[in-house]
Image (cartoon, rainbow, N blue to C red; front, side, top):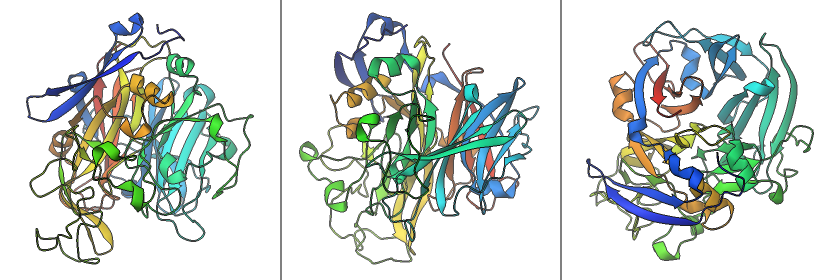
Length: 470
């Protein structure tokens, strides 16, 4: 068991080449002797078990995933955003590959229709549903400076909802960066690093990123204290009145700022960065690289090249300019959304542990076309983050934009082999929208939705992996 005096002493960066030829980085940490018996999760710890189908039309636009147990029975849940917010849940079918059957449990209209990013988490011990939300495209009455991002509802075993509380927000942190899902922070970590018992992450792309308090193009992880009965709520759409900056902590931060500080051409002189793309590359025509204004066709190299090098990943692949890590970077549309969880226990004794986040990443060509983000295909990458490195961000040893995955691997081939849509799409449509780890069964559930894309017999799917460790 980790002691409260746990502190990271040294961080050593080691680079290894894996069999596929991809460069991956593991972050070796020196800490207390109790940590030596624990290992960070890696690709070999994840075993694909199967999937559950979903034939409900409305689930094509569902957001977020969580679960609860009622009388010992697992119930998965997600938010539907057809016209208004409502929550549906399901019990597991008798076997994999079968379709789930939904039942509606919450119909409270507490969100406006233009809240496009939703994360949910059911806090079993309190019978409480946490909802984190964000507008995607700021427009009247939204300005891009809104900080109201979290509210809660109590939901009992009989599906009776009560005690709506919220909204809460965080001073200087826009809802478009803190959107994602709330999760429990293991007690050993919160004690060692004086954080609250909750965290919200991982967020990702949102439209009009340079407007107001912009999103985080990479992992964003915000820790906060107990809210109920302690901190005042603010109104929906509020831009002020959130928790003061000394009342929460940030353990990962890739907020873009404005266009003048978002890009870099000199690695050593930068003060911002983007999330890492480890297993897949992309030909990035975003960020002003296409000389045409709102074209309707795919760009051609080098005819349509504007000549700028900011965040450019060229026709021959490779990482962003002057990056010694060998990583490519997130492009517009790349996002974690609310697909993350903390795989550990409160005592800090799980033999395999880590913070996992699943990124939906543009594949092949990514470009702006017909007033929309466009990409040839999508890759899906599980990334593992070391809590020890998050602690270094919290205590100021390293900046938030240097939080990197210790390992990462693509699950695209597994998802494609089990029927998901492939080919070009808008990254805001077909993608992974939620994930949650069930410690009772060591199972990781990942929700993929079609985003309205025509599918043979389903509109979302729930993929299940078993995660090693005890």
